[in-house]
Length: 208
Image (cartoon, rainbow, N blue to C red; front, side):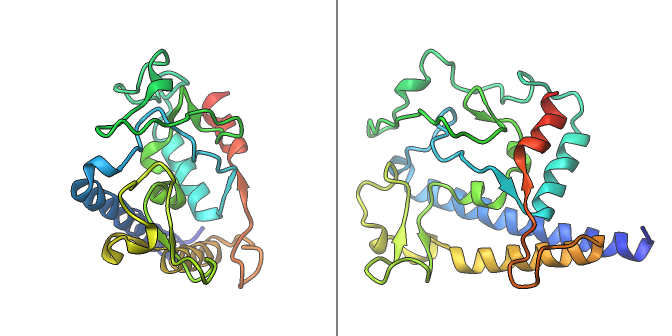
């Protein structure tokens, strides 16, 4: 691969990291504004069902695995993960109980904690937030995890603290397409920009 291609890839992945940082910053703002409205806790994992990612997110996960070769099934779990004997009774300050059963879980969900948390995909960074999208039915402008924001109807949630899912998705698709072009990868079509990579294939590299 040429130096020019490497520079292009580095530029695209840097912009991908900025998109990740934007989602993380929004999460932090919401958590600061509504700490008692959020049931999301380490050890829940009910939304951790992702089975595949696009090329740029697969690259980010591979890079994380390569740079953390000492990770193992146990070591990869954050030190403050909730113990298995109490994880079924997760409650927040308002005693919102959460059913943590997830039989179709992501291959990277280990001991009900994300083993690649710093490199988790964009969709994982928006789980639990209020999402707004033009793809929702006309009768509904926004949606969220049923355990979060019990004092709000999703449509009434402050729009500046909701995720513009259309904009985030459009940016991710464009970044993935640019990454594929710079890397010489068939993206699967200019419109979809999607030739997916199975997470179980990536997980085998970490847990084999």
